[in-house]
Length: 360
Image (tube, rainbow, N blue to C red; front, side):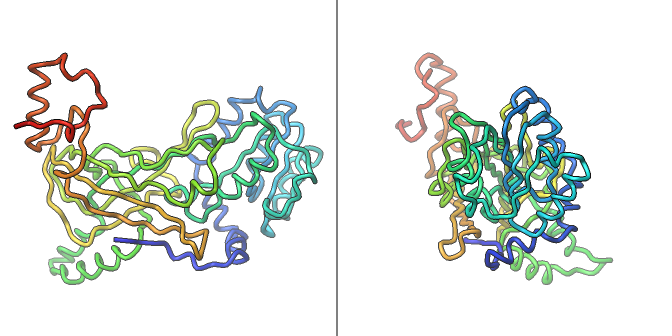
């Protein structure tokens, strides 16, 4: 099944959408997001002191202000939308006109020789499921054209995770509405939900397994081509409890140079990004220790490069490679665990896989 977000905007509409102050109030109200950046910057004051910084997609300019407060000598706040005028006013209000220079332009249109190369790039570029809206592309352009060799990126690493999940808040409502059954309405509601990814808060209690890492990006050398396709590997998840497999929950985390992390996981503090869910058209009853196999691909739409399509493929867990040891209840894995308990020295190499052995 393939799903995509409706992002039928041209470039002008994309930037105009960020001129709405309500959007920025929402983001500035996200304390987890804001404190993660502020703490990462202030924990690295020695790295910012007397350094030159670029803030890509500066918005209202708050990250640029943090960098100036941390002791940066010069900050280039690059903002393509008319919000740049707001950023200039914020800079003036905080008495940083001598440090922060607001540049109203797309980073792709800034001449590389028009400003000095910078020591640090900061940017809050993440979208739903990490890459929605494609702003990471702009950070890569900034890195390649404006960052000094061995310069720092805030954040420096990005990861995408997924796990099978239950979605009781989506569907249980229709089972009894003031003592009236509406399961027929619920089925249509579910069909509509399964047509495109859903942005929603998923409770950590509704995850059916541990997280599976779909993508790991070192932003110091990630290329634009790397972002064309993410995920796409077979994932094997082991159910931690009985439940109803109703979707796949997707989230991201980013790491900063000081080692701190901003995570949008269901078990972390909620953020405005929430989580992204691929909804299954039908429930699948699962039991504890049952394996679930799937492949999730996130591919850039060639005709609309700020848009991504998600493709979820359900796999037969019996035909997918399992780790050694594997705690699932498939016969081959139970036999292998038993054999390893009897012969612990025979399988010390943890990279061996179940598919490499004949259990007959």
